[in-house]
Image 1: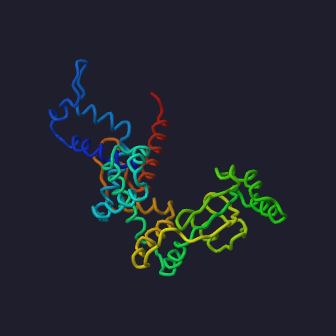
Image 2: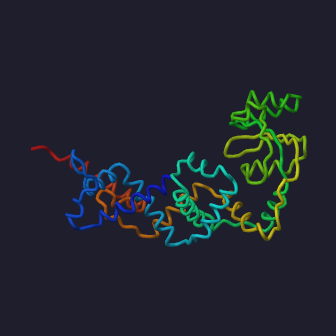
Image 3: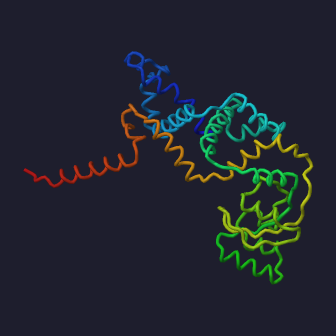
Length: 310
């Protein structure tokens, strides 16, 4: 996201310069030195050659999203305030460590992120029952261990050893593929939204001391042991006050990233984008048109190769 926002900021002026028809405007120096000048045209051409396709694609995507969805300053402000509440006095340090020059740069990222979220979650359905379940769980924290392995066969092997009396921490150190292995698989206390949905669903359904069967997620297969459950220190608040936030979190957790990319691509295609930058005319052409053009070019090349030499 950071790259996207910075690229958009940078290229907004570049493509404006490219649209100028005046040769004088394009030959105006953007850098002057005793070693020589750099013109706007030279600057533009260099940037276009290095990053043109990615930058142009990002800019067009943002433009398309802005045409169909609205993100208000109030929404952006709320996101930034939530981040400040989360990190407290460390907020500025976290921004710097994440590569942001300042809060304004982070604000650009938040704005674009909210645009994407609006597009990708508009068709995701979240039921009242799901919201209620999430709300009920928000008042509980779970302390757990897990053993994460790559395949189901290994997971079943580990589960068998646990059933035969094997020590969970020792088996985690031996088999688990994530960083918690060195600490016996300990994950500490977590609450809703901290873990992938499959892991969370299983952990909240278990009793203290229980060990799960293998649970599949995008990361592999987990074997979970619940060590403790306790109430959260901070009150959750009334359901009506947090309902919208819960719905938003649940919608985001349901996103299929493959389908999400297809949705963005579809929105761009529907916008009938025409590129007037040399070399990028086919950047947003429908896949079938690109394939047809490639096939035509291949046939032409083959015919040329077959022509007899005089």
